[in-house]
Length: 523
Image (cartoon, rainbow, N blue to C red; front, side, top):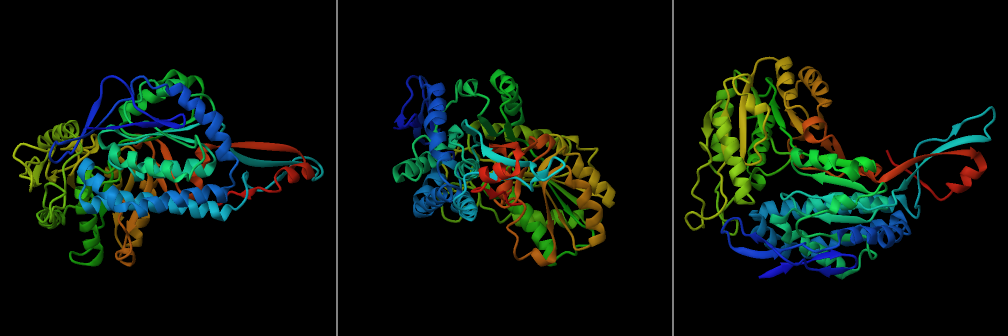
């Protein structure tokens, strides 16, 4: 069986001792094994600081952008190979695999374009200069410079390509070397992508390191100039935040955690019109794309009480067209969950909902998957539940079921819809579907502070929008409260996490000379 090595300190190395086996989640066939026992992770981080950091910072923004462009081109060039790995190791359908890989390529390309626009500069100016004395001579200017450490990225299992690329693109463009660790169960895609990057020579030595397997004592070696970005459960995030080196060294940490994303259907939307169909399509897609294993997926569906019967019927009809099975089989539109552990967690979440809601579609997720040997695979079918009221189903607003599961809840007024959305206690994205500007004006501003992004679904965007579940590199990704309090992407905004803002003060002509070759941070 193939062993996936890690790329640290400038070479590919395998761990020694016990291994973890990666499976095909549809068939449970072993695919590869990983181990990181015995690897010197402290030395690897030091290598990134000593070798990778100076090499990346020596490049201009345009040169860093060119490296990102090459990485994007590698994904496009090897797209079919990576899709095959995603189908086998991630349980993804071909469409879901393309969603991950194409999203990664597009994000890298977007930050490549940003690098090109910043040109030959290596320093960023942040805002206008400030007169500090009686005359213009005594002057102040804020600048942004890359942190002199390593950007450590711990990624989730659901988007092995896109999740890694969105963090790496921003950090590398900002001027920090990256140490990235994919989630173990779906590491094949990330491993192959890093192999391609290393073989291509797109990045200087030490700019990208890759740990395939258990992180062991990785975070214990973090220092004050490092940065840590994590995507995963809120429980793991809390442990990372409390680790002594993170606390003692004030290591900045960016977290993307749980999110009870909501979709609100405005009372003005008529059945059968463009906005209504957009709403139905977005809910059904988010429930089944990646088997519901998306941090941005819609979990709560709020519908006016007068319309809830029609909406439940329409969603059940759409879900009835979803064929679940081995994603390698023709016609299959939804694959398995990524692991046995994840399947069990999702089933436990469904069981919690069962005591508070009634079934609309899918019961508790029992399914006979197509093209799979009986008893094999980590499958849960699409499950749509219905609550009599939010108060009757407190779990809906308290626990995220990270799978193909959503619950429809009635509301009667715009104020009640706002209250229901807010009960999620902070999310990555929620969406409101309406063309009534008065209604939108009441709901959207009232829920904005609880989310990193709010999607407004209206008639004029119905044919253009990729849906609220798609993360765009130009807009921020993250959210307050339950969602982790972090923020990624957002174009140039994302680089701020990896940059130190410093106020320079002194003679205006000297400061002008020091910043003569700097670029201005775009809005």
